[in-house]
Image 1: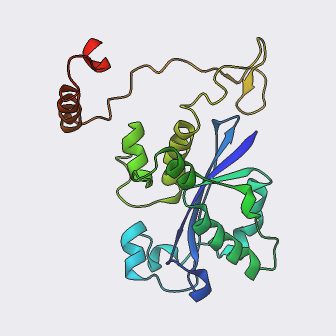
Image 2 (image 1 turned 90 degrees about the vertical axis):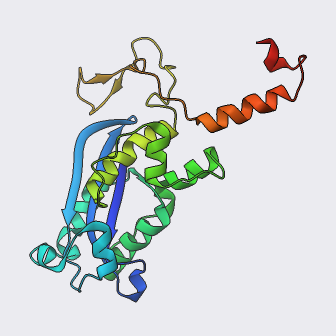
Length: 230
C-alpha cells in the first residue's frame, strides 16, 4: 500500500481571496514504511508575500522570484501522488489549496476521500488534548528541534513519524503477516522491513504533579482500595 505524507506552505489562509501555495513537501510510504522517495518544490506564488506568512515559513519574495509557477510543476506533482492516499495534518486546509491551484489550471482535482487527516485521528485518540504537530511530537517523544520555522518537507518527514505512531507505533499490522510473507519497502526483492522492539522505552507522560494528585486520591479510598493492595 502506497501513501504520501504531504504538507504545503502558503501565502495565507484562503485561496479564494488570492492566497497561493509556495512550497510542497511529500514523503512516500510503502506498507507504512518510508521508502526514501520524496517530493519537494518551492513555487513562485506570483504575488507578494504577506509579512505574517513570512514569519511562519521564512519564504520571501526574493527567494521565490526565480522558482517555477504552479502550472509548471502541476503534472510532476500529480504523477508523484498518483492514486496514493494523502496523509495530511489538517487535510481540509492543504486539500483546499491544492484543488484550487488545480482547478485554476482546468486539471482534475484530488478527491477529498483520498486524504487521511492525522489531526482528526489525533483528536479521536486523545480527546481534549492538544493535537498540533508540535504537541504530538512531544507526546510521542519525536525530535522536532530542527523545526524552527515551518517547512513543507521537514514537516512532512516529522508527520510521517507521528502518523506511524498514531496508527500503532511503527508496526501497524502487529506482526500478523504469515511466515514468509514480507513487507517490501520499495517493491524490490530483499528490501524488507520487519518490526523490531523499541530500543528504549518512551518516557512517562505523567508529570510529578499528576503522580502526586493520583497518590492523594488513592489515599482517600481507604485501605481496602484496589490500588493499595498492588
